[in-house]
Length: 290
Image (cartoon, rainbow, N blue to C red; front, side, top):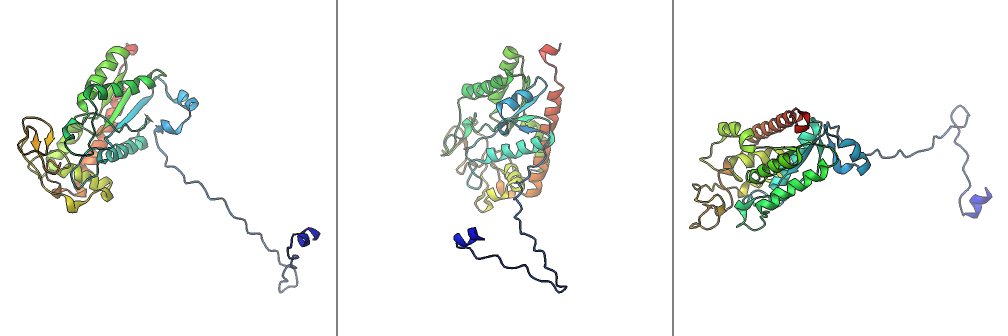
């Protein structure tokens, strides 16, 4: 009591009396700790969440290592964001992580995208640089055990650098690298669903995919049809007299025809294709297995 008085505190009041004459017991109010937000249960593991000691246990010869790949800055017309492919890559990576027993590396945000260089904000690496980037990443991880790698690939031009990377890794390191071929896994359902006369970029199909997975990153009020026959060169150009495929907007196709329902069909087909690729990779024979 003296301590309380010295600190300027009021003396404790007597406990209240109940109707029976007994003193009521007042339970102290104890604040419960706020529980940490629980993480979703996944089949796979994010390597970036682990320490190097934990990584040493995870990176075995049997491990499938997944590398998401999607441009962080590449034009997609006036209605989609520059980081459209990065959004796709992170989405597909999350879907794979949820369903496949893999070890997932961080997303690679730069690669080979030469077709869009005339549009501000677009980035690309040289073909050789893009090839070597993936080779170096794979070798950095493979030295600790893994021999099978899969790229969650959200591009088409990227195949031109991934193919020689896979060939080099197999020939020089005995490492198997495979990657998503979007034209193969999504082609059949795209041909079934598409109403546009042609096109493959920021178009009906790609816009539909974003309406399904990230509608807040689509501005349909800015979507316009912009389709011209393919030019002598494969890239898009803002010059109507240029050698490439002319596109004033950076669109090649008709995104005004996009719907969420179409996007769901395409996205789910791609996810199924990726998961099938990974399981086939798991069963792939290595040179050391012979």
